[in-house]
Image (cartoon, one colour):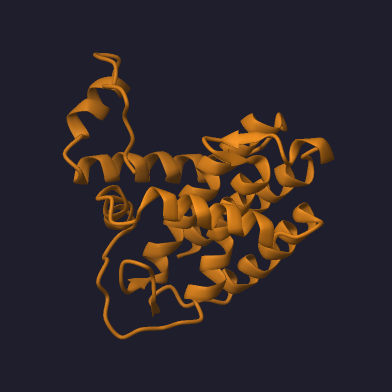
Length: 202
């Protein structure tokens, strides 16, 4: 549990520092796809909000046994893209007039929640019960990937520690292996062929 906790905490704080650097005139500029930077940061904040929410909602049954299984479930398309897009926009609005300050507050609360959590506790998630130790890497993944998106969109630096990048890359590979695309990923990573386009593990 220590490593997944450390990775989540490091990712949350790194993204928080990047969000603090977003210039005032960037928030309403294009972010990712149809999202503005504010929407993108709002969507990213959900990686913190869900941790705060879900870790307070224990359940009896473990349904999703690993972080890779959770991400693979996302790739099945059970959640409509427009639903995800609107949640991001609403989360952006919910950041209020001082979005960077609000994001920073969520970082503090999420870190406190995680550091007090029992790794073996089974908690509610959108796809069913998961152990905290399995769920946290999915949030680190979101923070890492969208932290890089924020850095690109807002033209601000982000310093993601090796523990974050290593866990995220390993989870991406594990998810690909569960979804029938492991050969494509392995061949690309070893320089043998390009990935087919478009390509995504989620």
